[in-house]
Image (tube, rainbow, N blue to C red; front, side, top):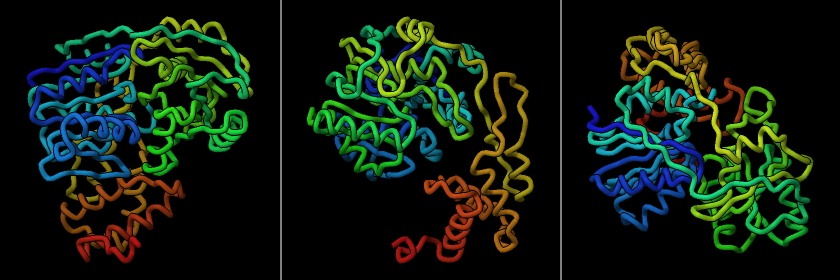
Length: 399
């Protein structure tokens, strides 16, 4: 059992993640789980300078850098190793537990991944009551924002001030805005999840080194990227969330806008492009650092049964009596599992729990190509048979 469970909650630019770093120094081993690959990478690069390259590891869905005697791990939340016990465990941006797509991963780590000496949760005050329901004795520390955040109205794309980030919600909009900025100012950085790690890191470095003064990004920038941004401009407040087009929630706008102004430097947020204004209710919500209480988070049973495919699927669909949990159904890995378990050639191989466990682990491989489930399942089936028959994936096939 963990000796100490606490939370540091508050708006953006309060030094919450920095506090987690300072705590990490006090332990022999530790892990911090982040909501973004880029954020895990940014903190890993920082930690290399602090702790030395041999002592730090990076694990995301894209990259694995694990020195033999690594003490400190920087991971996306989904990639936190299950088989390693750490003295210190921190989970960043815990309000992501309310996210429809990935929330159940965050909830799982909040409940099941604890440090042997200390566990720390970092994020929005909107999660305070849920944390207290899960851990009645949790110590909650509040942090105020270090600088002011003010609305600065509409600015034309060709007249945006220096050190500005422009937020767009589609690839077309990102590139269209980037092109206009390039024509007006001569250079621009582009940051979005679709880019490779090397390209993303290079784009961030351009902006951080002051070689360009404008960066165009998707809303992923709202989840903690510590860039030296003075102004955030929204080109839209409607996004496609994987299911439908919808308006951003007030909390989402506040999270993104809060990236403006680092440490003691004041920040500004405004609108540009086709978005001409924000209503007064949103503006005061952001400027006053308000938040909406999260009353329910997504959950999925983690005590799985591998005695048969039927038992595994049944255990994944198990209900909970906790009223603040929403049972996550039909997640991508569950859908892939059902498709593969309906394939006789796969089913014939599942004679023992160990093989079913391998299949389940393979189902967690993300569909980066965004193909239909059936196409991705064929890819997973190939991996499954490689591991079963050859114990590895052949290099020639990867090439």
